[in-house]
Image (cartoon, rainbow, N blue to C red):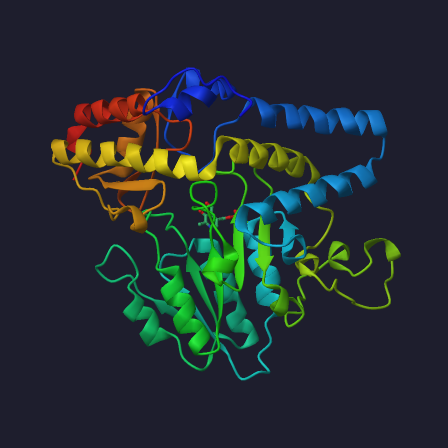
Amino acid sequence: MATTPTTTGRDALPHAIRHRFPLLERQVYLNSCSQGVLSDAVRQAYADYLRDWDDKGAPWEYWMERTESARSSFAGLVGADNDEVAVTASVSAGVNAIASGLRLDDGRDRIVVSDFEFPTVGQIWHAQEDRGFTIRHVPQGDAPVVPLEAFDAAIDEQTALVAITQVCYRNGACIDVEGVVKLAHERGALVLLDSYQAIGTMPIDVKALDVDLLVAGALKYLLSSAGLGFLYCKRDLVERLRPTATGWFADENVFAMDIQDYSPAHDARRFQAGTPPIPSIYAGIAGMGLMQEIGIAETRAHVLQLNETLFAGVDELGGTVVTPRDAASHGALVAIRSTDEHALVNALAGDGLLTSSRDGNLRVSAHCYNTHEDIEQLLAGLARHRALLA
Ligand SMILES: Cc1ncc(COP(=O)(O)O)c(C=O)c1O
């Protein structure tokens, strides 16, 4: 690791890397579920983008190399092959490309959407109602996680695709991905996994999970930038989906400049659209590289320890952790019930503690750079604002 690992003990990981993230000198940052902290590497990547543009004039070939490098970094992160990955500008762009490529003509007109989905996913699938699809929601009910039985009841032989989220952006709970994949595949349906709240916080292997499609973005735990997303599509599935949300960078030969027909690429590049988001790609390569250097399995182990400390502290304060506590059932994000979550986020921000909120809960999301002292400081803040805990 290109860092200065001087400290041993439970915070050896963050102490080795914190100097790469200047913001951490002035803030306790527990909001990586919204976006990661800017690192020296990503700042430098933006400077490199401007330098290359200035030095090279029109560096298209180099930009294409950078795009391939980002594709390959992401493929490496999820255990995919490069030709199974599309480089997009957002998760939404990837989901739109998939949705536009689904056809009604194979008799399957139903999309099953878990109640854990980020709004963009629900909205994109509902937009397909105009094309004749019907959307069936899988309710969370009173459980912290959408139960497998609810998927069992919702997925049928008419289902084209099941959209699930690996880690819920509201409460940090993990869906039983393997369980849903098994149910969906038994009934001939595809599975689209949104891993945005998981990637960078836990190892992901698309082949082991056996998902058909996976989307994620770079801004949060991949320490990168806004404006960059990725879509994995299982190789055998690529040519069964023919996107109508498309563009010249999805064409079989991008620089053929042919306006006479539509011939999408034979690999997952067919899910791309226009000019790739080059500045964000520079940042993405740097952020993903840094995250690989730091270690995703190491980050997972560290964050689980921080969350244990957080659970115990909230219990001591008499607060309510909404997130399921066992390690297999939660991501990095922890949700804590509040009487007024916006007031609590503001009060904590006044104390130099950066958090966020959703759905009546405070969201605390630690990452590789957070220490136990950060959690102790947050707990001290929660004690000061105890009246805002429910
Ligand atoms: C789980 C999840 N999916 C999707 C999104 C939205 O991604 P994008 O803005 O890249 O479309 C977010 C953003 O917070 C998210 O948390």
